[in-house]
Length: 407
Image 1 (cartoon, rainbow, N blue to C red):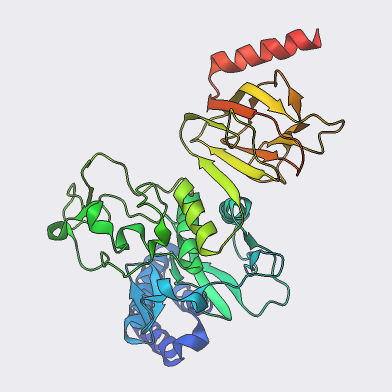
Image 2 (cartoon, rainbow, N blue to C red; image 1 turned 180 degrees about the vertical axis):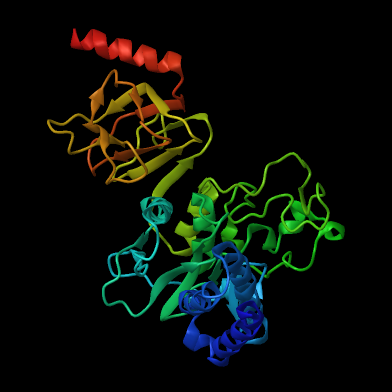
């Protein structure tokens, strides 16, 4: 008998929730779902309620289509009449006098520890490589509040701004950064005004919507197939195995990665927010990098970062050349290497300078941060380094070298 009343209870709750102004609710899914959950679990098993409430919240989300909020391309929430906000300075988060763009996420205590750590790691990568810094909220009026879901408002809207980061398929580092980039004011990469020169939209394979094109600035930067803001080749396909986006002229170019920010993603944030940052991402399984102008002298007053990030493997780093201005404590020019993705990570190599051999290094995980700094005086030719996956051969060779030094 009690099963019969469930639709009535849920319908009443749904109507009650939608009777409140959307702005007042501010997409507070937690309050809405908590009430619905109490009603449902008093009548039905856990699994059944989980399915029903997922469908219920989907209906609530669709309701936004008829409100002052428009749902655009599946995961972007836009205020009516502001679809061209990519060109709107007021949609950006303000910069402090110290040159930092400070964004305060609200409390994450309602999340599991693993979820909190995933979000913190994804946001830390943005903070390391750009002037956008995520700081603990104290009394800030404008702040980001994490909800369950996979969506975001577009740009800064003011006040308590919800962003959906907690959902299956939305907890990868790149997926979290994808939604946060929407909050920073970025559209999907394939929605750029010049996208037709780089991809072909296969309209015949598309369910409906989600592939619009915007009158975007593009910041004078190249189209980025590797962006975390790019759709995958088969996203929203109406036919299994049929792509919705095909790169041109080379259809084999991979798109839709969610491993983390691409090098151009970092460049776009830094350019949009006028960050004075020298930072790069090295996402391939092997590669090389060097100080500016190498082998000519590097510039004065440098402060550059290279984030090496590879998939599920340790990183092996070695220097082929090294020549930095020497000083007694390497306070003038130096290289410093961290075992992680931030300057708060454990130090693998503390400030190092001078000329000659530099020890090879291995990160314990899949990220390593290399910092290079120079002062306003003497320069030298700098350095050249290469990295790859920490193979057994490379690790054994390193261990042998360390053992011989200790003996």
